[in-house]
Length: 534
Image (cartoon, rainbow, N blue to C red; front, side, top):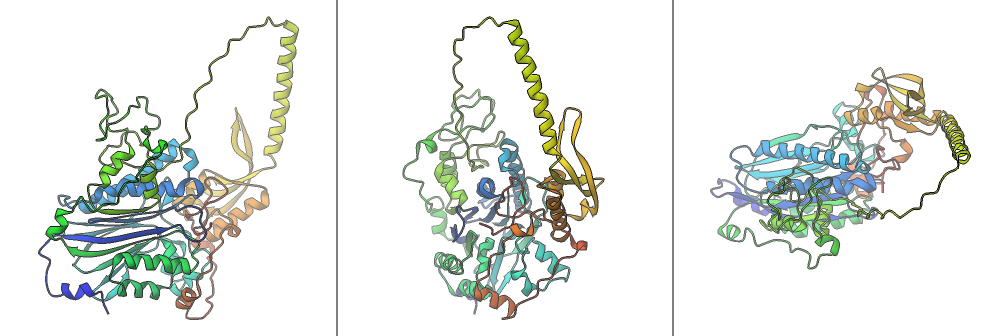
């Protein structure tokens, strides 16, 4: 049985503009300490983003991306809505690269993006990663998005059955993400016909722990969008999902006069009181002429050459107040906290709140103290100089001896190689030597993993380095298999996916060596980890 609104839509064409009726929810889940998901829903735009990059960057990536896109929630695009959506996601990708350049601790962060833009009588769809989009139309419920994952590639190649995917140990390894590695990531883009009454579900992969038939039954049978979103979140928590979960529910409806009259009224209230940190005027990192801004976003001094760079949390709230919306997850936390510094060159209208960051306050330099110079004795000076030279020589020798106990995996002649030492130079001296060149070519790995190998992957010893090479060959990732802790699916999910049988888990061969960016923390700042790990 289809959605009740669908019957009214059959047999007639829409004479009025279409808008989205929406609900959005997000939850940190049973295991994670923070929410790396972000989601936005309005009358013309819906976005879900699932961040990755561990403690430092997952929430930053998803929040920055969603807040960077919220200005797209409008109706008029002069015939180029599809182009604008794709360009904006690519711009968000460049924003993440800028953030990493400013704060190297964020290196390796990334995010999935699944977005719908309702404009010009079409529903424009954009997708990268493993968040999902489902559509219920004319009684047919189907998944519109395609997961950009390692197991999906195995399915496409006929090496894995779809029912085996949910229990595969590397089911969360991503092949494509938005992040600071690929300057122009490949997006899935579609311009879809749209009719009043159709319903959409956008969700992060945390919802995958709920059996597919239970999700479909809820989407079909729950008329109220807010109630439907709440049930889906509850089902995820009951299933014991270790991941964050975010859902956006959309019904396509015809715009009414009441919708037009309340276009800037039905909004989420700003926090009642701002903390001192939130009320302070944020500055663009690295900008030489930081000046406060007015509530409208214009610099107080009109001679400021960095017009539009210095934005405040109040500017973001003004942007959000222009239209009805729901903002949840890490992006909502960023908007509420006011920790929204900007990137130089971003305009007020489009970059009202581009960054969620962990920014430490600058400390004032200590005042120099008055020192009474002492007249040094020549012999004492020579003795100190000699001692320094001896200490430096001993330190250099000991340091070099230590480097020769280390190993790392890198590139040699477009192939993966193992080196003895560390990947640095000391003046004219290279602190490593080539140990082994493997037959694994770099271009057989995905782009994300190629960049990781070019940056070198440190190893504790030769055995550790050989293990990294095995992981690259078998799974296309630098992360050891022991760091991938696949969460157990719920009984209902397993039963639904496998039909009660325990599927065999095929092991990928070297011919399908692929790598991935993943969406959880890792002990190393730029280590590729496994999505779903706490």
